[in-house]
Length: 258
Image (cartoon, rainbow, N blue to C red; front, side, top):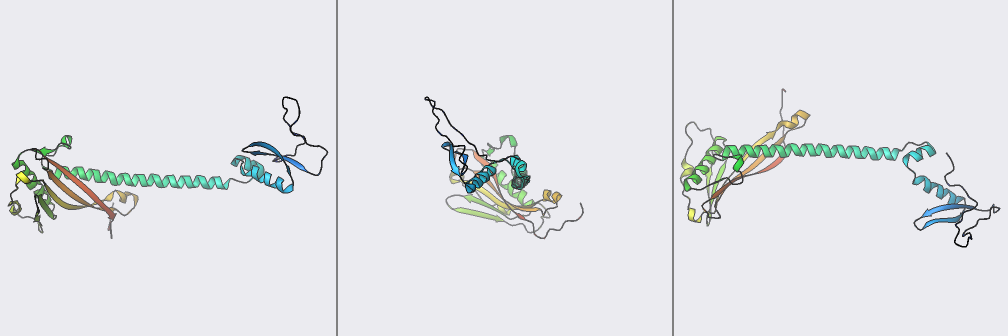
């Protein structure tokens, strides 16, 4: 509402001798003098109309949005745009975090379920130290895991890693009518040179939590590996279950009802 830079007639600083450093003739009507703030300090320079216009633009440029509004009555559109950008970016981050949390939780819960289903006598409290100590226990845990997989009717491969890799394939194509076949159990482990036994198979699952938000559900393929680790040859065979998930959007979903 008032002039941004105003002409002055005098500015000075007095040293120890009392003399003025700068003096301006107040009767000189042919020029204007203005104060400029720079990194080196404040200086007085001779300015014409063009310099005065630049000075006004600079002062307006460094004004706060409120001062700009009071000076020209313009709404701070740039400020509103920046705030809108911050809002949308924050919303995207929140939605991404929530979606990622759903994925992580779904995988962790499935992994824990697989451990209870495929590992014999599994105990969560002894997860890091879950192991067996006799040859018969090794066979029992192998057969138990494979039997559980057969119940789920999926391809299974049992690998005994000795000096060479040997595999026994199990491929149940139909639902067993009677007791589970035990043909795959016709093998013998040479424990004196056994490094580890791995049981590998895949399971598919659908995460339907996204349906609540009217989104297409995610289809998961879990690559599960059960390892009986005997590389230490200490008499303790450690058992662990690893789960790697690959995720993709389900194709041709068909959902009805609630």
